[in-house]
Image (cartoon, rainbow, N blue to C red):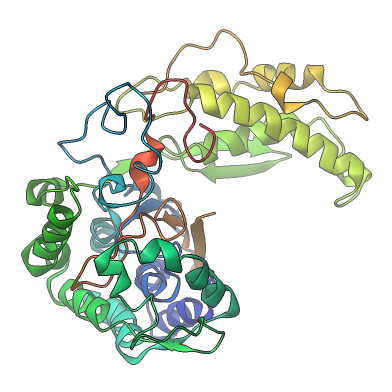
Length: 401
């Protein structure tokens, strides 16, 4: 089985399985297909998290999220008075971190893949060169972003803005072709990692940075490395739950919520009843307050994972809930006393093969269509992942963190 946010990507993943590929092969093919078919979040200019469990019980968590360019600095999004410059961390070249997706897919394939690399990238090449029909949702998304794309010459000249001066909005079933992206994918197909982080594509990325006062360099690209992390394990009503560790906040948050909710009889409350939704929402309020305070990158700060995942802590967090009254979110703060500090727009796909190997992958450009900057000559969008850093202490980013 393959599930993804676009039918073409799902079709390509299923075809890889039918050709004898395993779940890991199909995941790689789906990732590259999404870079063509789902530009709002699918990407080669972004990053992600991939979690797997093999039929033999082997498991792993690959962090291929973007990293800050070496020239990034603490106050890079502030003006001379120390105030945040509007949109600087979300829109334009300076918002982009060093992409991790291609390196991540290469590592997954080298460790776990079965079919030749070329066969996994070629379907995305074909999709980009031959074109595909826009879904209603994607047509509407491109129309919403038109003004943002027009702010940048490379984006205004890209396939995402209607060609030949056409002003009619995109519509469902319009054909969109990506010749520059097809050539970029061909280099990845033929050269693997070097086809993106070195050579012509790296040259195009750096040239785009220089045009827009961005700071990603060839050294940043050459030095990028994804990281294997140790998955988190939890229990819920007799089931073992395997999920992603920090720097993802999702895995910790999921396990916290399951611990908070286990004492409540959700089955008796009923599916999507007011009572069930009430308990789930109350748990989510508390988990997201902890997330905003304690979760961060474990490479650069202490994240108190073990403390956050103690059942007694999470049950105590729910002690302030009332059975039939919502707790205002403004009254919810993080749980007290834990050590540690912090140093619309994402998509997820799943693959399970006939042998029982399973992959869950979340991939993103951060905001919808990332920084809105297309790399001229390469046809792909760059992320705006730098907004995930704190631009100024006490000032929330686009997600309220």
